[in-house]
Image 1 (cartoon, rainbow, N blue to C red):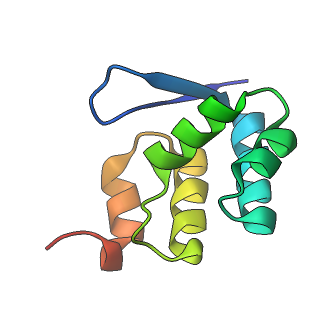
Image 2 (spheres, rainbow, N blue to C red):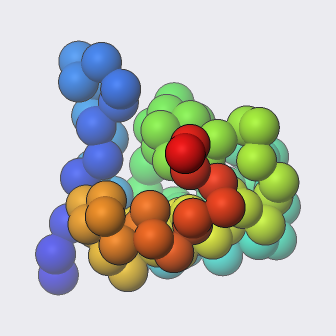
Image 3 (cartoon, rainbow, N blue to C red):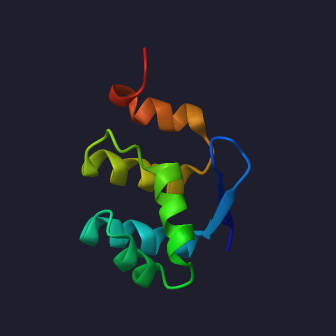
Length: 95
């Protein structure tokens, strides 16, 4: 199974989630929002710090919960294809 590697903005800390972990994260995010303890339990293979870091790397806190879920789903589907993610989230990018 391919791994989705998402690095923090400063590239000093990286958290790797497998595709399966990313799916579980997304499902947990839909169900529990940013409740990191519950997300950690749903993912099942990452500690609290890793789940929180993954959330912070992939979910803009100024977006709605729906925007966050859309972004996480796109990253899961498209990996690092930033151009395609940008196209699909056109209303959330800077012009």
